[in-house]
Length: 491
Image (cartoon, rainbow, N blue to C red; front, side):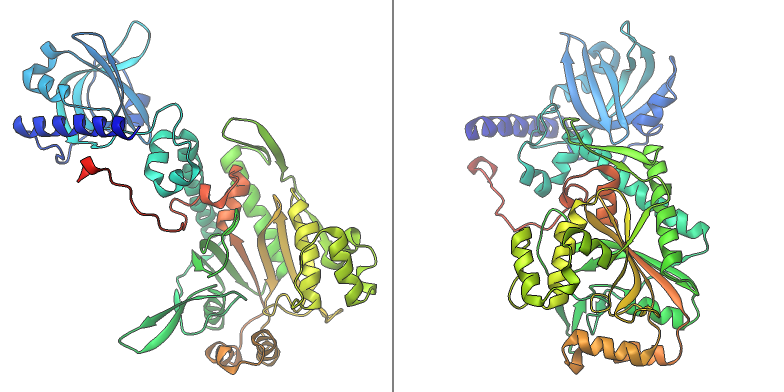
């Protein structure tokens, strides 16, 4: 296989040298086109003079004449080449092309006897040489890890991957449109922060040399967004990256995209209504329906998601009791024994509420496919939310579960600076340096009652598209570095 690859590379290098000898720049210049290939094809009519550019993806040699396909992200279009019609120079250039090369062509449109829209080439311009062959058109990249490491090859050969990323872009665009139309203003807050706050997670640490200051890549933008509520910004959102120095899994990447929305004078119930309306809007835009299937790349049905409104709501404690009856009346020792019986892994250092959360995640969350708003979580789990007036042991929040994962948390935001200080101290284990005093100072100037929500964009895209791994919908997921393999003939 290595020998075969080296032979292919040698042939391409020879053609590259021939182009130089012909006085052709193998990595040419700009080429003005009539439009994308998809646009030209959509407006196709016989007898037009058009110019297109794209990658050479198919070549059918008919002897003296040739039929080829040029492709770009919008589609493909057939071109017809004959030496008599495009001249000797262009014919010589064409002899030194390979699949994967970029070409620009000009010519007149016609339709073949088989009904295929085609361009009769009169001018051919070489735009860029591909020194390496592309993956097989029909099989793509069978090595999954290589698909992630060399995403560009995956996008060239895998229509399913291209469609996923087109859908992701549309989802993000529609989220912004949805919020803008409802009066929310997009803002930007720092990604490097002196204290990693807004969530309980291990941060990435960096250092600013000029200031001699240790900083953290943000784990959440929440504390800065709330400063803007204090400053009088009533409806705001941020859609950007967060960073958490934690594990990698099918649903976790250390760098991920998050939406956070804050709405003055609202509460968690209004935020639940907002996120329900937004996700249903996105489903209609992507699928044209609130019911859609998840299928694998071979087209086999995996599951069907139903987003019909209204979405179900249930209290956290009631859901725990359904899967582990008598849980809250049992002793901590009995609860740990129940975890063993239910096959839920826990560790000795876990607190009682963390043990309960493990039951929730494994026995409720992972088994819930259709939308479920889980409400009134224990206050220990959500230190930035407002306590429930009737039951101080819980907070006024929701967690939206769809497709076996948390898609969105939403809060009635805590705005009492004294209560907030106590909560942050409890979360930090008494470490004063971990308390964001600037945030507490802002709260002391008065923050209006507000609702807030977050949406994990990557998980939302997985749910709406049926992607089975977060790596499938992130262009370049984080991977362990691997040395680039270079064959002796490449040196």
